[in-house]
Image (cartoon, rainbow, N blue to C red; front, side):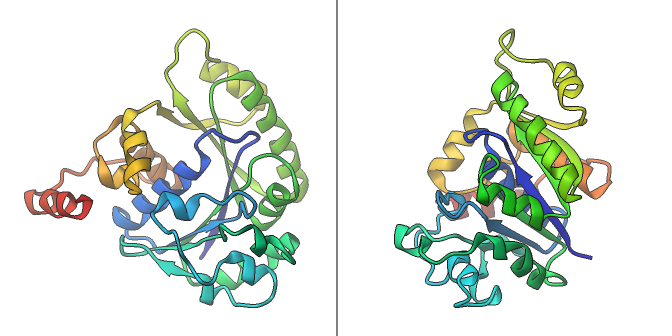
Length: 257
């Protein structure tokens, strides 16, 4: 069965795309799942850039214009089992795009992956709403600050209206101390459980510069460990840390050069 999971947020800048790329990477590499990650943020697309994709002749934009099929827009990543459907970086490619078609085109991926992760545009504009409607399940990404949390409440209300199942909250970039809302406060406000708390981690910045998911670049970093736990939660499994063998460590080091 293919699980269609929207990764959504009320505000931009909360690390949603980082979560999508890394969650997809760990589901494919450690849990051997077939994963397709889709950049549904067509106006400000970043998912392909995060993974070092600067050129892709066919993107989600052409699919939503009826000029190409979903199969045409799927690209392999270097991690076996992980594929990506990017959105175009060109402003010209926004012309004629019908984002309302997303719900129907995503259905073309049924049976082709175990997980389809939709990287939503932030907020509740047309792109964000299209992702909510295309998703069967939702992960809400927020940081522990009031404006970001309040907007998750709004997104959750819309999710209930469209019938998408809420999996929980990913509390990202945690660790600023007394200026943050506590996890308990957030759960009371939003009425959704927090299923992952990912700390602020300097290795994330290095991974962004390297165009490599942090779970691959620094698998034992604080953020990587929590993303691995999140993947286990989504699979209903107990998280068991894996120690890399010497040859695997060498292979990773060579790939990063």
